[in-house]
Image: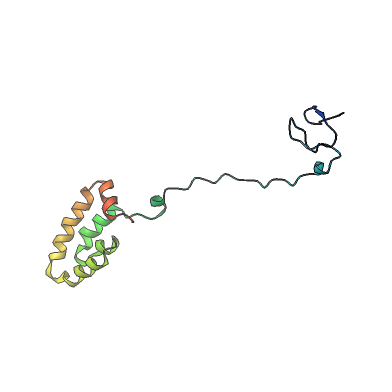
Length: 122
């Protein structure tokens, strides 16, 4: 009676694999070298989607609103193109200037979570 090379278990003739450890028995057809299994690499953790995308800064929006609110620069920065055009059209009336200063102060005093919820990427 033959013995398994790996675990030493007794083997019946004609059995291609050891019933104890599963290794191939010498002299059988299945004892030919098996192709190596492809290496599987662990995937690196992906950062959160919102962190991957650029989010708007409330400080930048506030400074743009205070300094260039007359031209609607903060609205363009936040992606509100329509409102930015309205600010440009009415810049000669000083209304966008006052609104820009007020909005800048609101942006700067708003919490980060509230700002991200309202003006963050969707």
